[in-house]
Length: 72
Image (cartoon, rainbow, N blue to C red; front, side, top):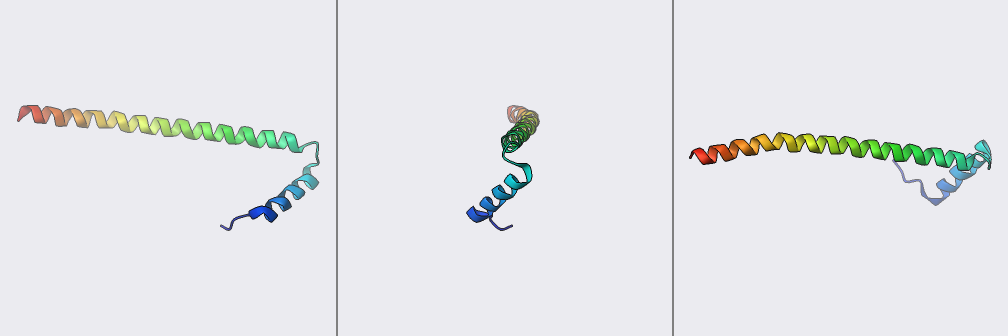
């Protein structure tokens, strides 16, 4: 996927200004920002859950290794 660059961003902004008008752009920006924030928070929660599950799975394995070492 090619990079957009400065000319591409300017073209996108001009197109958005024509389509949505100057009054709607701040509302549109806020909506996009809120959507990205929600996505980021959801992704962080999923990563935290997965990390926690892996940690819980590792504890019994470590305990078994300790028990085997004590038996020797």
